Image (tube, one colour):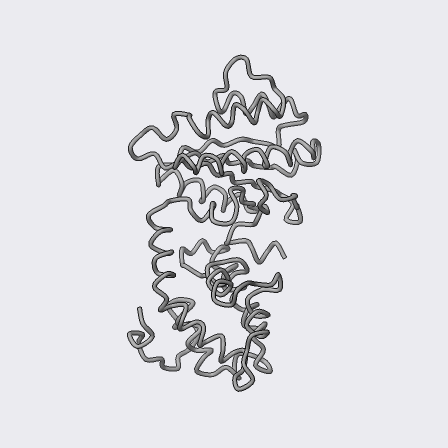
Length: 290
């Protein structure tokens, strides 16, 4: 959609806005009423709050403005890179002298909405279920169990085979191996060690029967209470996620999909990069992780 095709904006009460873009148009019309001192970082915080509210109330609305989200990725391509401070800092750093960061944001917003590649990316996300859990990393963190449940149900509706594992019940590494072997139907000769897990999970990811059905979308491993396992077996907990991420990447070469959803009761939990990629929070809770 080109900016010329967008409807003309009129001032309205924020409660009458229909989506995030309608809300942004109200800010564009009266920036001084919304942004103290014209701060673009205030707008970034406001949009993160908007994203959190969508997650809290389980509202299915596309909102692309969290750090590392679609808008950030598009902006990084346009500017030739991004900083860890977020898209507001990137825009501020690249604002020309005859403009302001807020004006520059809205100019870029119009370009983003009309960009054909962005529209294509959205269409791809619709055609490829689960892609939102594969774009940045094959391992995605969750805090609220409700959101994990919703994610797994959406994946099942799209044809994914979801295997749920209660990691909070694992007191030892051997408990983990027994549970994984049973859930993934590993062969009897499974060695119950991390090297054997890597080998057998690779067979499941790349050659297992989960994707044989015509409507099969892939395999999703959903761990609950993973923080408890991380506390008792920190090294194994890290290596398990690394193995999953590495095998998921190899599976994509064969046009198969393996993703991992990890729920933690500790919102401050952190992992080292897995499969050479960071373990990131899901989009609904990204702002909460801060």
